[in-house]
Length: 126
Image (cartoon, rainbow, N blue to C red):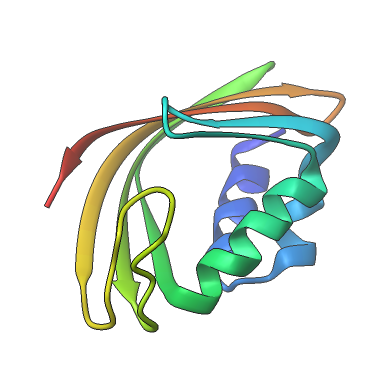
């Protein structure tokens, strides 16, 4: 994947364009949210974010992006704004109006023009 591909992927994610961002995934993509959650499969990621976006408006900002032939490294800042109470959200309890800003490092592995693995690690949260 090229830098333009990764930027298109993030733009589609921010637009909540499920078909747009999931087209970049291999069918058996693995997504690891640190020690908090592991999701396998493109449809699994779509299902997860379908639930998230019903409760949380998420906007990801690219701070640094380094693209290599077999993947990419992304330093991002993400703003999470809760739009509907979700006290039993598995990653953190949240109520309407809550705002959380998180900086993360995401490592992507790619093969054949698709994302096959995502490792996400948060290092700053406000």
